Image (cartoon, rainbow, N blue to C red; front, side, top):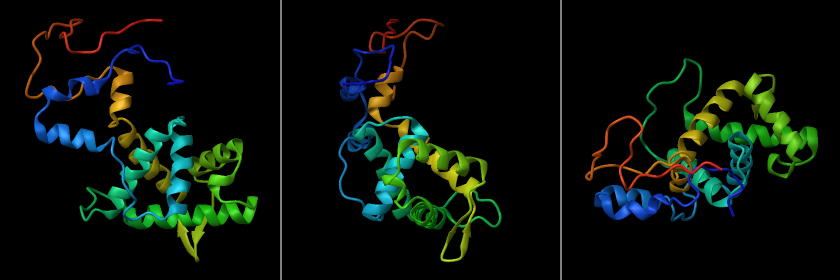
Length: 199
């Protein structure tokens, strides 16, 4: 059951997959088939899962596991970053050392890993991350809290809105190639696009 309100309750973007080119269809279908983590440890994955749940205000396993797998794929990829501020460690170090430092902080101050804390404490800690008031360090190495927050938020939102279930909820009918659009006038939709239904 979907606890979130959507204007497109009867729309499923995967009903359109036969109209996509084979390469695109394969990419999107893989987003629904999650395997084992390549890089993340179980503890890192659990911490990320809870962090992303707070950041995205979503508790659905299928969505959050996909978001965590997105992080795992980024960490295991040899593709470089487009840009990074001076003095900020590369994203693989920032994320993994940041998760470790966060769990060390939570264990020291609250007696449990981040994933084991009550919701209101998790939200408070994420707020401190956002404001940069949380002092994090991993074995004496200072972790820039706001930069960690920014990286976590950017990647989690990017992954969230690439999941087919979220596409369905927002009425996005998926890639238009090679079918293309016919009705381009404002306010008109093609027959295969989602039709808004107000509550």
